[in-house]
Image 1 (cartoon, helix red, strand yellow):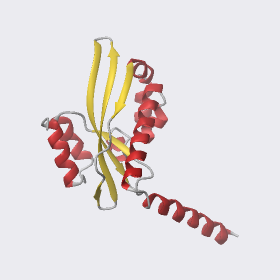
Image 2 (cartoon, one colour):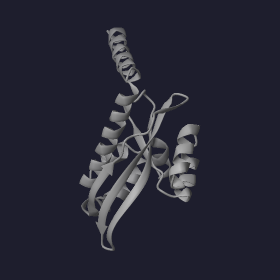
Image 3 (cartoon, helix red, strand yellow):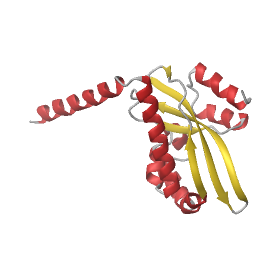
Length: 173
């Protein structure tokens, strides 16, 4: 009985993995963009758990773990969500391969209105998938060299082409 259950679970796992591995690059890009939109909607809506589920695990660990991050975010999630007026997401870059990971760069523009006035911030978001493009996690490496350098200490395995593309954007190219 247990053996049959284990075989069925293994079969389902293999089917799921195979279906993600067979996504085309344009499908992978569409999934990354959709999931970034889901993450942004969670931030705007104050859904801390969903938002954290999309943060790259390396960053979550760097920020003290999911429980610590969840506790910290719950204190200001409503305020942040109410201040965000809109978030527009650009088209994902080419998908780059680094070992068993897929990586791409997506720009988004956050329009907010905090007490100090309206703001438009263009951010560089790195999307990373470990399952062939079925699920993506994200790391906002900002729009400055300092933020990018800090980011590289957390997730140092960026594809060289992606790193060059990001460096070009930070220089304004």
